[in-house]
Amino acid sequence: MESTKLGRTNRRTWLVAIGAALGALPILHSLRVYLTPDEQEHGHTVALGPIDSVLPDGQHKQIMIDGTAVLLSRVGPDITALDLTCTHASCPLKVDLGIKRILCACHGGAFDLNGTAVKAPPTQPLRRFETRISNGELFLRIPARGSA
Image 1 (cartoon, rainbow, N blue to C red):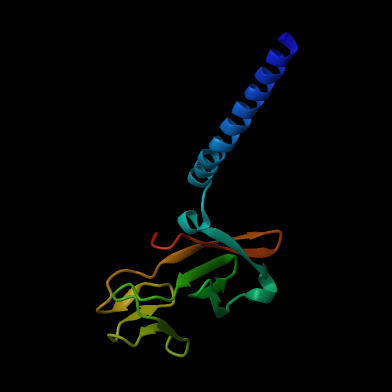
Image 2 (image 1 turned 180 degrees about the vertical axis):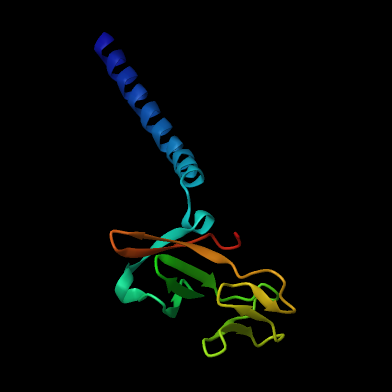
């Protein structure tokens, strides 16, 4: 009689443990999602390739990253990456290297190649993306959507 009781206790304990574990899975998953940095929330870094082939010294290059137009500029060791979205009305911008301006067709605004607003209506400079060179490779940090 005692062995039957012992068997049921072990089975019951085992079933309770399995039930508790299964019940905890959704909670643990929710915590992982909540505590793990998300690319949409925190942004990400993109490897663009060898710096000398991607962007030779003294050059400008327009690229698309995740649906965002970016102007890369290089003068010696200095790399600039500008978001080609107007700070006035979020219109797409066009680069005109002949006049060294970034132009907005929506309202006639203009920026210089450093991203400074030089013709109204925009008053804010273009958003800059962080760049870095590591082992000869160029990396571009894309911030989360909606962050400055």
